[in-house]
Each structure stands twice: as structure tokens, then as C-alpha cells.
Image 1 (spheres, rainbow, N blue to C red):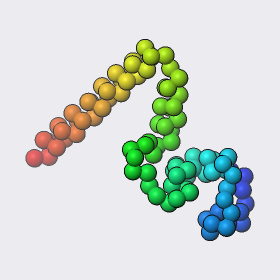
Image 2 (image 1 turned 90 degrees about the vertical axis):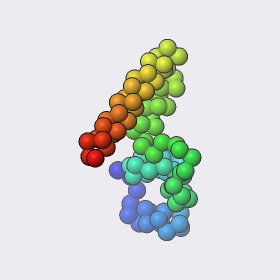
Image 3 (image 1 turned 45 degrees about the horizontal axis):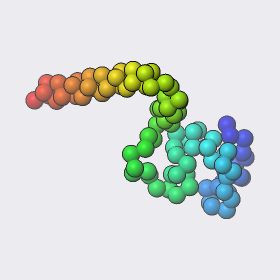
Image 4 (image 1 turned 90 degrees about the horizontal axis):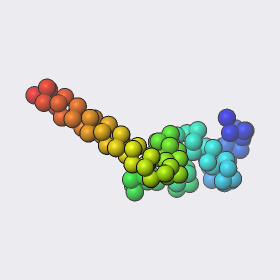
Length: 95
């Protein structure tokens, strides 16, 4: 899927070769990971998005006009509140 052979991939895993930036990006997307994790093995604790699908969409949202960004933020806020409310109600039902 990223046009590299098993031998080359094995060299990446063993630290014998370093993939090009383009291949690193492709691998991170394919493995649903981050470039930071692929390079260091450390999970990112800064609160960055690990879901590449969401990260791509939020990156696109940065280009939106302010009014459109605010509309999306309001929708997200509503979904977050709905999810939290459902979680609390589910916990209450379990008691």
C-alpha cells in the first residue's frame, strides 16, 4: 500500500534505514499512528489527536471562515454535551 518491499520495511523496523518523509507520512496514515510514534516509539501525551481522520478534518476546518468555524464548534459542543449526558444517564441506570 505504500510501495515498499518486505525487505525494506524490515530494515525500517530494525532501524537500519529511515524512511523518507513521504513514506513516513504514508506509513503513519496506513497504520493509524503518528509520525512521532513511528520515529520515537513514544505515545504523544500532549493531547494531540491520535485519530488521523479527525486530525485531517480539523486541519481543513482551520481554513474555514470564522463564521463557519463557529458553526462547526457549536455542533461539536452539542455532540459532546449529548455524549456526556448519555454517559451520566447510563451510569445512573446501572445503579
